[in-house]
Image 1 (cartoon, rainbow, N blue to C red):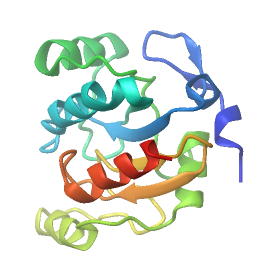
Image 2: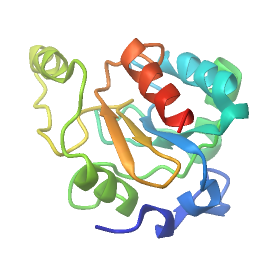
Image 3: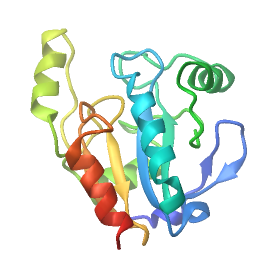
Length: 181
């Protein structure tokens, strides 16, 4: 498996980045989309970021257009949407695939590290089928707003289904447990 910290990343503004630049922090890596039924989760993600940032926590948003073409915008449009509608101040990265053959290396490493998610994944799959969609199967990312929790040491310690709200006690508890280490 690739060392997460060494995988090159690109910020939404074109600047170079990597998880090494966030070393020592607890990270919540989330694939995001602007035109999804789950898009209001941006508000909760921003609230988590603001509440725990001073303790060494960061949310990292990765726009992806993999699911229902729900992130069609340019980098500039995505950044503007997030800022205006949700006051997003956490780092956003360049849009890239999070599933399939062309998935970005970070997501390949994340799904390899934790191949199954916790939370309401099966219920979410059934909901997608009800809309006539064919959901992905583990280890692939299921939909927008799936969350990976990365410990201070860079290990992937949790994976939460898209329907897991940012304020969900299981997610908040996992973040607080990692911050306490």
